[in-house]
Image (cartoon, rainbow, N blue to C red; front, side, top):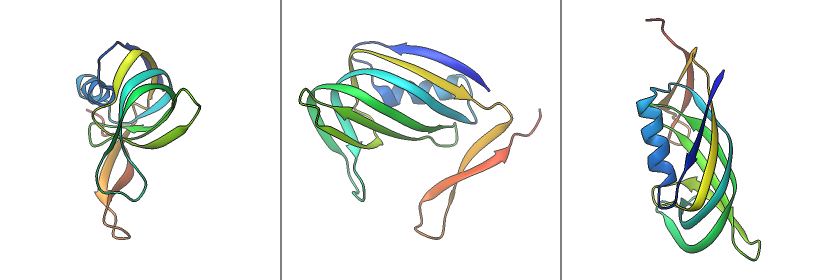
Length: 134
C-alpha cells in the first residue's frame, strides 16, 4: 500500500474533489484512512432513504470512511454540530469545506474494486479483483 495526503480548502466539495483525485490518479482500489476538518454544508443519504438530506451550519468532521475506486466509491461521513449532536450517512455532493479538511488515502496497487449487482437487494456491491498487469 502507498498513500496520498491532501488538504481541501474552504468552499471545495469533499465528494467532487475525491472523485477527481480518484480519476486523475487512476485509483483502482483505495481506502479512506483518516479525515479531519470542518464543513458548512452537509448533504448525506441517510439509512434506508432514497434521496438526500441537507444541513447548513458549522460542523466538525468526526469520521469519513469507505472505499475509493474509478469503478465506484462508497463513503460514509459523520459530522457533529456545536452541541455535539452527530449525524452520519452516505457521502453525497454538497459537503462544502469550512476551514480545512486533511485527508489520508491508502491505495492498494495490486487490486481493483468494482461494483456489480448483488441479487439480495439489487444494489451494486463491492467485488475485489486482482489487478491485471499491463
